Image 1 (cartoon, rainbow, N blue to C red):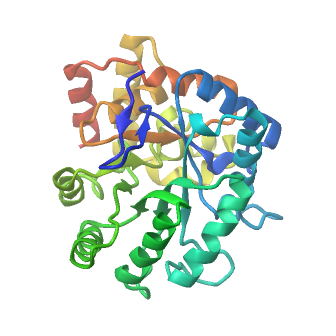
Image 2 (tube, rainbow, N blue to C red; image 1 turned 135 degrees about the horizontal axis):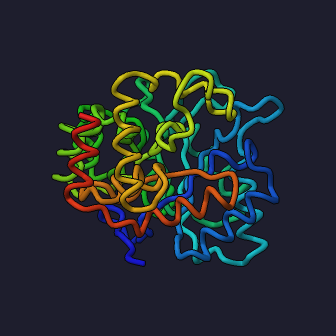
Length: 315
């Protein structure tokens, strides 16, 4: 399987990233282990998580996903085969999004301990923190890189202006720069990434890993009416997609999927994978059946006509 380089780093990943937000939430430890085993067996190597996963679940405090991934790597002895992506900056009890140097210095130690590793491959600023200057955040990352605790850094949820400002400060102050962007992007949610943000990433040679690549499961096709929203724990986040445009996208996915004898989710992911300005989409699974479908998406060859039909439906 062809691996793709992440920005200007020496990290290479297969064209699909496993989303670890489900670990410790909708996938228990045993299920998570079996999913990760199959993912790596299929030739994939990158897992995305965050310190805050899955803090939103009653009884959880955050770190559950990292803990499961750490136990799995320890049990399998496969640390060298896995590109570990995690994030910092979410509210972990301090009451705000936080990219201060003091918080990063504490949070990285907590993440390393839960993951049971010496270094994080890719450490992302999870959210913008308007109260902390880019210089302070990047300076904290510089110390972690020099100490060998982090290999490369990136950011999630920045707009073009915020990313430009961070890149400019890194260049001006000779600080490490964000090498990867993690934006929300899928067939329905295109506007925030396409345009100035995508142009900036391309011009600067940044890697791009998309999240919500299946629009919270909407693009799987299993939600086609309000009555379908109770089908999973994530159904509540899908209601906004049930409009004329959303249903038009599902129709196009159905048509392309039928031609390829594939599932709509496989086509939706293949559409992202085919984009030259995207390194890989993130997608989650809670069963081996779902995972097999995700695996197939990485080798699904869409024609120019397929892509055009999907583009037109989602325009």
